Length: 236
Ligand SMILES: [Zn+2]
Ligand SMILES: [Zn+2]
Image 1: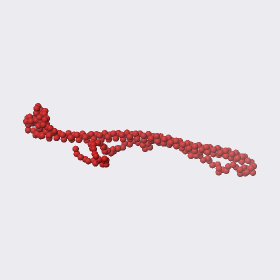
Image 2: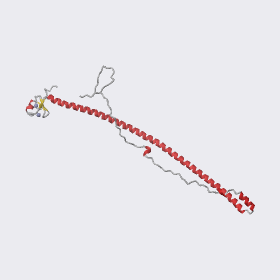
Image 3: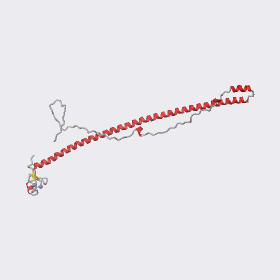
Image 4: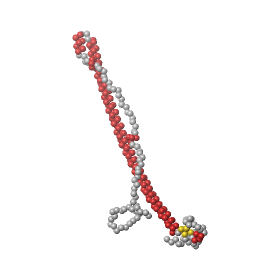
């Protein structure tokens, strides 16, 4: 690069020949002898290289930031996609559970109703049997009562003893009717617990850092096939 024809910003017609290290500024011969008199000077080339180094450093910084930004963008996309998928899955699972439990609840209610009906049938049967026994007992008692009436009104001893022999019921059979236990069936309502249905949980997903391959340089080769590309760290 040619540093010989850089016009001085302060003095017309003059080219810069040095740079002032104190002021960090390009200077011409007039500058050196006036404003920058006694200041430490350096070669323009040296100044250029210093500035150029800064440019390269900033370029590297920009590249690093671009890459980081790209990775962040990629990660953000991935998180969004994953959360969307999870939302869909969770929604589907909740609806499936809703259906399953609705069916199960209906089935369980039907079973309770069936049990209750069976219980009722059994009570009706016991009641009917009891009624029948009472009726039968009543008839027996009426018959016995009539027979006893007859016996007590008999005036002949022979008839009396004969009729005593033929009494319908023996006294031992006159025992009380056995009533069923007074037992009732009630429904004790419960409630749906979270543990029966399930709940929403928030879990932390640690996203694995992924390696992104991108083309930074292209090469041509005479080789027909390439089996392996080695990764090398190098500067610059
Ligand atoms: Zn000057
Ligand atoms: Zn100066």
